[in-house]
Length: 163
Image 1 (tube, rainbow, N blue to C red):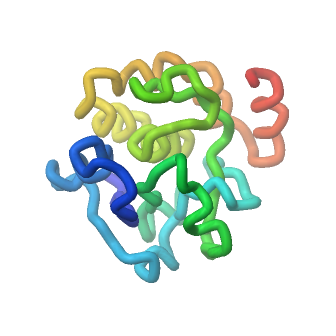
Image 2 (cartoon, rainbow, N blue to C red):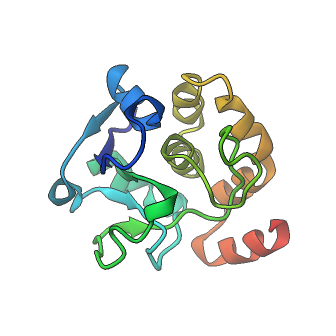
Image 3 (cartoon, one colour):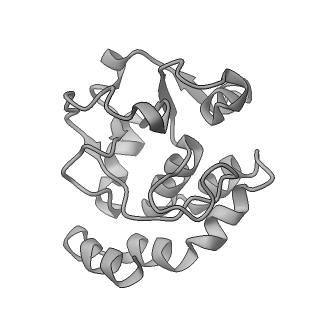
């Protein structure tokens, strides 16, 4: 499995943190912001969209996500990460934001990244920790499959076709 890291901002209820749960299962590891420099960093402020071509970065250094509140999304707005990537558009399946565009939980974001880079089994495995997890893959099956096959320059066309 690809190494999964997260930066925990302590902005939400720790009992509801999807990444803290993965940490308890030994699947994810908490790091400081400085520890994310060489990681494939999932962030909405990135200019580059995640694609299958990012697989080698994830295999070499792992994936990192910021675990924080959607209500305080500007916390890292000024920071740039060398391997920062934004996810293509997807719908959330978590109970708080179900059906909302781009309001993914951290575990959904990591699972989407894994799926798009060709690690579908790993994506399914981490989502299995939540009763609603597999709903994310079902809800987004068609766009995820197309993103997984697409070259980076085609992803905006796919986003526009679905959303």
